[in-house]
Image (cartoon, helix red, strand yellow):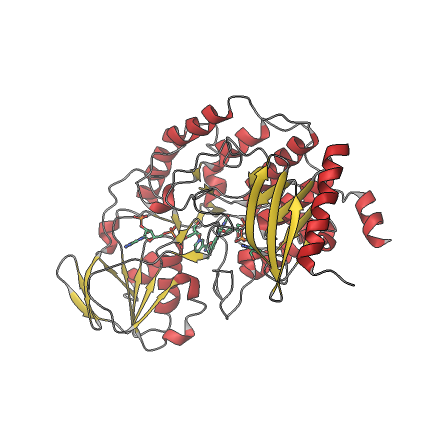
Length: 468
Ligand SMILES: Cc1cc2nc3c(=O)[nH]c(=O)nc-3n(C[C@H](O)[C@H](O)[C@H](O)COP(=O)(O)OP(=O)(O)OC[C@H]3O[C@@H](n4cnc5c(N)ncnc54)[C@H](O)[C@@H]3O)c2cc1C
Ligand SMILES: NC(=O)c1ccc[n+]([C@@H]2O[C@H](COP(=O)([O-])OP(=O)(O)OC[C@H]3O[C@@H](n4cnc5c(N)ncnc54)[C@H](OP(=O)(O)O)[C@@H]3O)[C@@H](O)[C@H]2O)c1
């Protein structure tokens, strides 16, 4: 008789327990096969560890798998990355190794191709269970996790020794709340897929982050009117300075202290762009870095061409009318709230771990002070790209699991220190709980790795094992 899947899981439990007792064999579960999950998996396998990744999707790529229907992904038809390619690549597999013709700021489709090529090159597919949702992760002890997954409506339980959480942090919409009722169409940027449905409509976009500015630019191409409401002033950073990607220009000063670098960015922007008031936008009141940077080449152009109208914060709704805080009242057909995302781990009990409101006390943004067999990969917000840091985190995690790297004894103190000494002093809003400076963070991670940490060749023993 064939056992139901969950009973197989229980059998597996005793097998794993006995293996642990007898030989300390580790088995690692990775949640997600997005940019963070695939590098976690690759680096675990590189160290000869036994690992499995679960993904609710049917392919590798996470957020970068564009789809017109509702999915995990929050990218839209025209999304291009905001960090340039040489600062947005894995060291183990660069864009030049993938396709030297990749654009300076790759599109979602180029990125999807890159991540899938990484997974193929390192032979990760046999280790990924697609179409599988991780429903619950129960910590039993420092050697044991009970993971419940669901595939095709069937639940299974399985035991692992370690857990790498790579579920992303830009998929659960955070909606704003205003007095009154808006009777037009109201959606979050997670659900915005393309501009075409907004043709001829009066559109209001809320927010000053990268989603808001991208969405406003896109709807302005087809809408009757597009306005953008900001609750504070933001600096809009162009994608190029002096013919070079702006992050490559900023990289030249990476050896300077953060405060001086930010001051230089501020001066450069003032010279190149001028003040927000010149565009009818709210003036900036905070220093550079106090909010996550907004990088956009077209918004200011659209504003100066009358295609996007700057507006103040919203005071209340009344039917299709929006009343702004300066008393201006205007009618809209559609509102797109580009108000960010919750940090969410729905597979943990809330009283176990809940980082949705901050703070996030994790050493190197990955190690928990108490749970030695739990790792967060890619759960940080750099002023730059996520996956180069996720790659280094993965290499440290794998080395902890082989015993090559030891957790510091004062890890609780280090977690607290990170919370109390962020790289930037930022405005106290929900999106600013996991910010790091890209260059400082990469440097801090590299300190924990040997000089020869780059590993460009797939591990042959795994290829043999899976192809036989
Ligand atoms: C519009 C937009 C543009 C962005 N642009 C940039 C950029 O320019 N540069 C940058 O660095 N970042 C950018 N980001 C941030 C983005 O989060 C990262 O680029 C990147 O996708 C992070 O990779 P990840 O693997 O950590 O998460 P994701 O890409 O979100 O992947 C997570 C994976 O986990 C899976 N998953 C989640 N929960 C479960 C579960 N319970 N069970 C099974 N599977 C699960 C998902 O299916 C997904 O495949 C952007 C985000 C958005 C929304
Ligand atoms: N092209 C790209 O590559 C691209 C495109 C889109 C997004 N992204 C990335 O995806 C991530 C998410 O970006 P995002 O723009 O979706 O979200 P975000 O960075 O969290 O920005 C949310 C914006 O909405 C504002 N906001 C939040 N709640 C509000 C409220 N109740 N009322 C009014 N305003 C409110 C925030 O204001 P505060 O400043 O006060 O917090 C901020 O301006 C970021 O990492 C971003 O860089 C990249």
